[in-house]
Image (cartoon, rainbow, N blue to C red; front, side, top):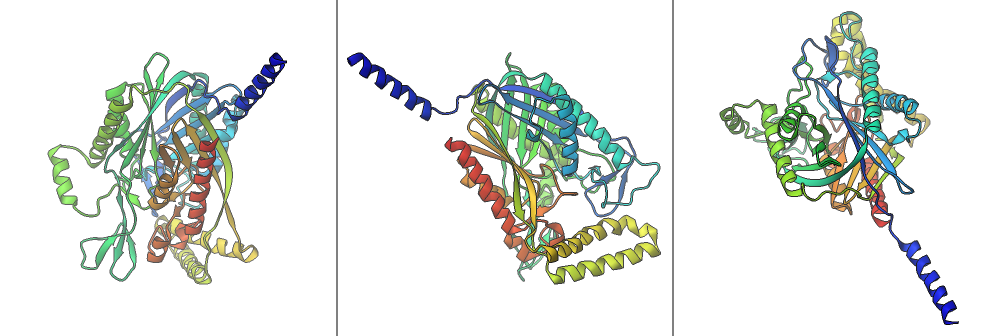
Length: 490
């Protein structure tokens, strides 16, 4: 009788333990690659409204791949590609996924995502709408896209096939690499990267985030193989040049490889920074003096600051390595309400398009300056016409949320204003939260502004700049936080 009771108690106890046991962490496998995606010259580079043909590559462009995988019943994977590009069109992401899936049929290709560092001196990737690019003597967009897909998909397959047991550590430092570029004036209006040395200047419109979030990955033998550096600043210090240039990420990568090993793979992640720029809005002369005394270019100075922050993080966390962190990668299509196009927006955009077409018809060379702006506004016209058929237009966005030990990684497709990223971070249950913007983009990318920015006006917050507006931004924040909560409550 006693034996029967004991067996019964033991069975219930085991069953209870089974039901409440947490997800078991398993060995982390890591793969990494860096591949050169520098185009054949000359090539049209993007990031301005006017056409620029680059005849020189001042730095190489890189795509850096990180593979993370765990195995067993609770196994998962993530394949992340950081690219020196202004944006990554969603149709190009689909092509990379398809190519990889053909070679690696065992993987879930939806767990591949690509993010752009947002350099304004990289080739055009959208098939149409940006510029009228000469048909001869210049690398064509379709040819660069094919080159890009070939290079990136091959590197992903190589990184996947080379994955091996490893460990990870996470850290955080600080570096001033970005400044809010939305300027508020006494009449309540805002300017984008406008002047501050005016009597009517009152404040900066939004936040700044000077955190530098880091991840360090080692192989089984203790060699540092890969590093992630997250900075809330787009790479657009040299944005206006007629050249190919990876901007400040090139000296960051080179400086880190010099310190930590020439084979190190460095992924640059741009955190929420739609209203941030590396260009200084005041105190520039004092900053230039210090930089000149150090004999550094502006991109080298930004790299110096970021590398110092990485060094401080590495020194603090290098011995706190995790070989079996909890790991889960959640992917979903998140429908976001599109920003409403008013009749006034529509009529103004339609008039601009008509006028631009007339100017280009009269002088075809005018297309160099007008073509992209014309198409930018024509998209607003088409959005208004779609609204007439369906007033509740939704924009489908791929959302990725990853739990890796104590940290969360979450993506969005926009130039996301910094306040939205800070809302996510402040509410997140994770110890650290990495926000990655421009992980895939509709066409050329789109800003996602706050309501205060919309009220202030100016480029980046006007209707043509935004597919999704403040309402959709809050939906994005709330759902991202909700998914993080679900991953932490399991």
